[in-house]
Image 1 (spheres, one colour):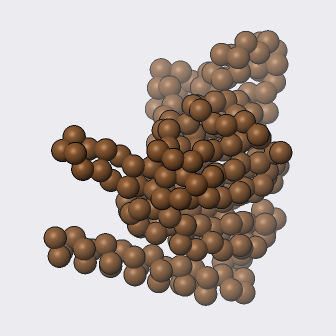
Image 2 (tube, helix red, strand yellow; image 1 turned 180 degrees about the horizontal axis):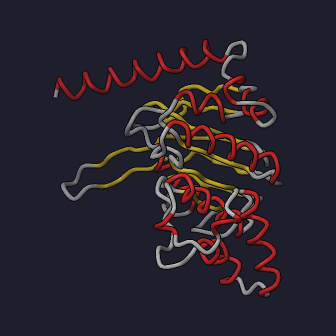
Length: 267
């Protein structure tokens, strides 16, 4: 069956002093092909740990991840990752960065060129293909990272705070691009963010994780991602229920952060 299944995932990190940290506990989630999911939670709730398990960078202590009926046992091309910093090859130009995956797969040169040219047009970088990545702004580097990820044609795109380092205007433009790519490619996307506004705007489904051990506290099913794929994002934010949902989630996150700070002060 097509889709991503996360079954009873728990993650414990054992420390050298004999103690352990329970980062995640019993996370179960069924994600249909083509959905876009955003994940929120206070610092230290295990958001990135969960993403790294799905990516295959970490093996869970308990449970399993299954993608398209195949158990995830390590990294694979069917799962693409976009990091907060682009993790690009600084010594290569834009075109070579995007072409890296297809080249490693042995794709014929003509097909490589066609694919790369199409993706550069999609992310708006056709005029910058010969530029070194260090010559680009942060937002443009993230566009390269998205194009490089898409060049491998993954079934699932995992994003770890991909827009967190961008200025407000660039971030808004990139949010629009993420929704555009989601609708045009039909990819499954899971995006971690610390921005409640961004999570509400981009998530068909929004997961709020509770702090350690990380677990799903609440899930929202929202219409704003679908709306944002066809209209101005600033207009979407004026839609009925948007502000109320944002404020409700902000209150939940704030209460959890206050609880965490209280624990720290008491210790």
